[in-house]
Amino acid sequence: MRETIKTSNAPAAIGPYSQAIKAAAGKMIFTAGQIPLDPATGRLIEGDISMQTRRVLENVKAILAASGATLANVVKTTVFMIDLGEFAAMNEVYGEFFPANPPARSTVEVKALPRGARVEIETMAMLE
Image 1 (cartoon, one colour):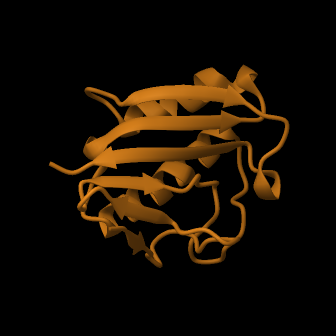
Image 2: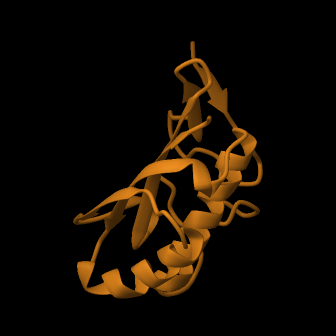
């Protein structure tokens, strides 16, 4: 059994995918990779990696809320960046969203991201 999660508090999907899927009898939530799109305009926000990371994590937070979860439920993240030279700035903002008992994380440098984004983050969360 799986449930599609959709909220207007985060950017609409820009392709054939869902913002998130709740599965495993409603215990697991898998968010699609989020880029720094403004949910009100659907446009990529202006700004540096810190601003983009903040917008991405606000989008993730909104999707998790629509699923009945919070960032505290996240057990794994994958961060995609176009420049690992910006890792420290991304990591500083990331730490504000996961201040205690952060989830497991992988970070990967990629050649490009949709719409010219500098960062994309996907999550897996578990409800108790």
